[in-house]
Length: 631
Image (tube, rainbow, N blue to C red; front, side, top):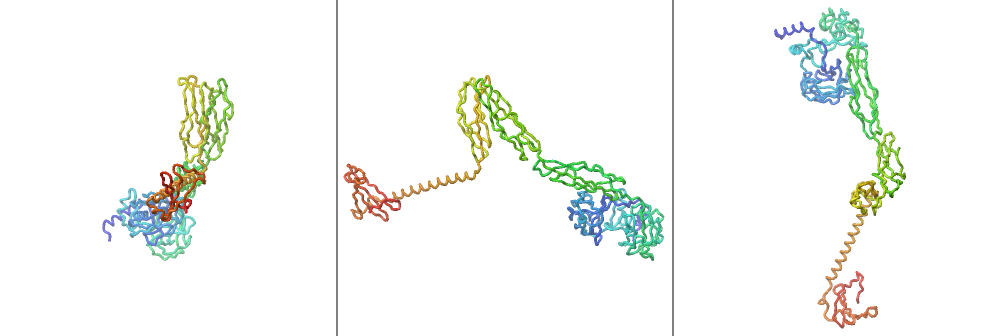
């Protein structure tokens, strides 16, 4: 039972309800399509229309913010892929990324562009806490609405969040949204209105409540088809000042003898904006050229704008934003503009990224300077050189201009030679070097080295040469050189020069030669050769060591005189006359005698020179190493 304060509050409501806004507020939410009031498809009022939300990035944190805003607690479960049906509204938002502490969904980071989302991508939620009555208040009326939050219905300011309000209306069965059978929501059920007493004044109140103006035409007898369910109201008698149809005099909820053949209908006649926004400044197609090998480019443009008869048009979605990165090829950029009535206008253009050679070619192998010496009094000389080459990213570049040709006559002095390289795109690069022709001096340079080529497996190589000699008077002449013997030279050709210059006149005697360093075709094969040589040397050393060890082993095992058998036991003595083999016996020592003996498995020989002091020589006689066996 309500107390006195409650009655006072209700009286205040009745007296002031015409001042309470009946309009949906930006960011309002509702849940539709669920089995209970705490679940369903999430719809949001945004840009003056109700629409859905794309499920890109949608999670339980976002769902919990929805439940908190609707007064259904702080715990929500997220659903995607149109779990509660896709609805009929436009997808208005995408990329929702709530932190979890927000009180309204519009407080969360998001993208207002849902250009690539489909109807099958809309989101839903299921809240864990039953709904409570809450207010949807803002501005100056916040405290007023909050105080009356327990009242069942105060226009559209207090309502069960996510569901229709008691007394809400809709038009069903018409060709347009501005016409149809009138249906009213009561006791959580949609029903119809009986045409008893139905007239244009009552129809005007219906259109006013729906936001479709104040002028309307009433139709009786189920003009837009018979409805179903209960017939909630009959005997409607409006005076034209009412905001909602339920405020008009009527016979009470459900108290009538009508059937659905008596269903009332309306057609709202207020002008409706059906014209799409007019877009201006839609960019022309954009083409950007980047260097060969680039993956894409950043492209910017001035965004288009739109105007509308209603006075307001806005960007509903865009596929790309200015300053974005575009890959190679053609990309279509699209904008969709909308007005408050939902009319749309589009703007599309293409961004094409192509690759081209925009870098000039380079001159390669440009001589560092060419020097020639002529005799005293000569006017000049014919000078030759190897022409530079051209290189370019496109792979094609050629010499298109040269100031002089090799084997051309040059006068004494310094002449600048110029070459120009040009690629297929017309980009060019110029390179220069000097040809110097000097008169021979009274001094000279002797033993100027020959040009040489060095093959290496490295990126540089040390090159040495015999330094040229000159005979000069240090007071009159100075000696200069561009490089020194033993210096490291990079891959390619380098000109080395020595000069003896006369200090007073500046004339010089020049010696020059070229050092060319080339990369070996197969450094791996060269390495294998070095390894093979090293292995062969190691094997030879091992064999030599084995021979030495064998000889030493033989000497160690050679028996001494004390090891010989006593007397002549086991000993055979042979007399060898060297006269038969061409050898001369030493008369001082007489004829040597050879004795043999067997110790173990080896035989030994001892020569004794008779007729003088003897010198014993023991030698291992082993058939295995090729010695003759003495029997």
